[in-house]
Length: 212
Image (cartoon, rainbow, N blue to C red; front, side, top):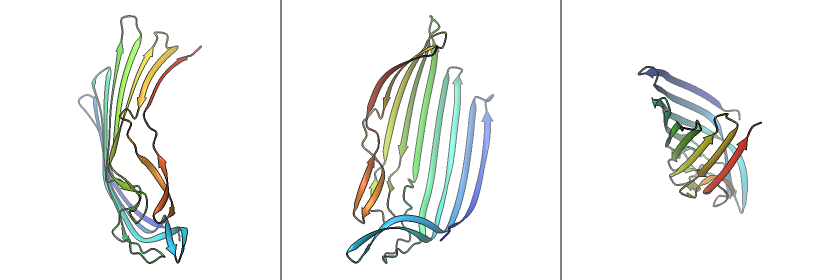
């Protein structure tokens, strides 16, 4: 069946302290009828991949973003999101009642932090340093909550050097610096067996780019 959604959203954008601080915020409420859900059910001795319709589900939450420039050469950003997503009414074709379960891939809390600093050296080379940290609360990848991922955080660091003519860029970077193991998705093969997609592990690199 085709799903229906009733959406209510409210937000604002603002600037403070001579445009150096920007604050944006929003809150939302989505009421779904017949939301389409992918899953696996057990029928007799056989398993079946299905796209089913949940009777009713609700997603509500809020988001807030900060962008702050305390110095001309420094930029700081932060984003926080809260999401409460659950099935109001959902009974699988196999007979299980999953009403009250959280929706798949819906972490309750998410946080992102970023700081970037630019410095012009005496020889007019530009040095840039950036750090990003992203954190996600625990989440599930199946309607019954069997497959899931614990809360985790990822740290990325990058350093750039740009020559005065902006032709040569040298970059050193680290992604997932703490080498965190995490899962980005699970494709269900049976109700208790799935194919896991893992996130990128710790990566270091050095690159140079020259523009003619």
